[in-house]
Image (tube, rainbow, N blue to C red):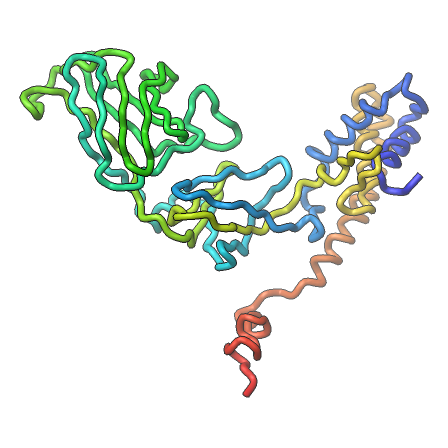
Length: 350
């Protein structure tokens, strides 16, 4: 049996827990304990440079927000690139939108006449930025909801609101923001809105109103000039680019792979951890969970001792890797290709 594979970890757990066969503890149960420890208990400080990877996604014209694959990756950091050009990374919305003007346009696109419609109009600034993850019937956690369009009208009994699902469908929401009905469509490129409310838009008890007392239906939306993105915001497991891309671009960021992916293998149990020396640590951690389920404090204490010894070994290996890396200074770039003798920068050879 190869050392360090998933099969070896399972066998080690059996030795540590005294469960020699499937009648006492099945392989699938052991795998559940292994996955639980590997995902939720294995210390994050042992993420080594071997887990560091390049996370890549492609942009789509007019789309500002993109999901992050949090099941396979974690911890986004610099450097970030779009079309191989370095981008500025933000993790704070206030700083990001404080740098890039994000106020919405306001425009009366129609006027209520006491009926449910149809109503409609055309946005004066194009293209219209679509909402993302904004369908209350299909909110895809953990990505957050980004609402960029609102059509609102006051009535005699309150306010009627309509927004989009990000795919060209307009829907009406109630006072709690819950779905009421699909009411129309929007073309993000041409800015054409067409909708029929689920209820009549009556005249509100306020005055004066424009157009002889009719009820204004106001569109609130974002409209931007599309261009190559130069900045990126990472928050709530998704990316927001600015400017919003005008075509497809490759965006590359530095990220850490989730260690659990390493144990998955289509052929038998031959997957191995990201670092081969982790295999016994994972075995002790899974065995500890077995003893916890058995309510065996002596077994838990023994596994804790084994875990402490292996954590110490893992930490030494991680520090050894990090210690071999160069510490950045204000002069570091002078030694790199961007500024070196072959690229017309500092230190250029004559």
